[in-house]
Length: 277
Image 1 (cartoon, rainbow, N blue to C red):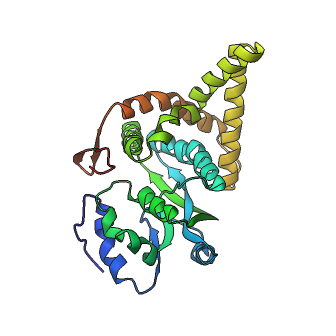
Image 2 (image 1 turned 180 degrees about the vertical axis):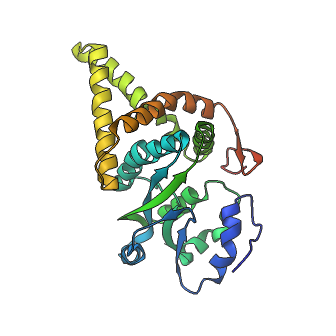
């Protein structure tokens, strides 16, 4: 099936909608062209889909093969802070948290809310599709597979604008989570915790903050090594990229939440409170 059909502003939905409607079977696998998975992923995922009460199966995005500083920063985001948040929310099952790089769901479920075309008016179609399925009472499940994304070449400006774009979109689609986002970052969390320990137990503010930074780094390093399955061969490079990303996180957040437009594929869109543009 070649070609797209314009059902909204989202080019991914426009590209997929014909194939979605022509698919022979109920379960579909949405699998981005810039990611790859390990052999056997489809079988493991379908096994999960066939478990009672499961409506969606997805895989953790994991950045690999960075070639420039910007893509190193993107790797730090995907493989540390984002991975922690993503895995924790999905472990608790309290809310829907899905990135649509690689996920499976049933057409019969999605058709109850208008089918794939109904989400063409949104930019964050993956999260909204997952939320719609979650609100039907179905569980989201993950396999042990990763959706490896080759990051290639990216400038620091590309990284900054990409992160700002998705933070602005989240501001309207998951507002409550976006409000508390600074406090899941190392600096925001560290400042609040240091103040609290100083206030309650007279722990020296800077001593606790230094302890917090070291522990946070070690947790991120351990998570990266566990997910990648490799030992860290360039600790100095990892530490430098980690520090740059952490220092940029709060200024980037402030820049993002103060704006209401995003640039995407050479076009500028105005974000609306409904989650559309």
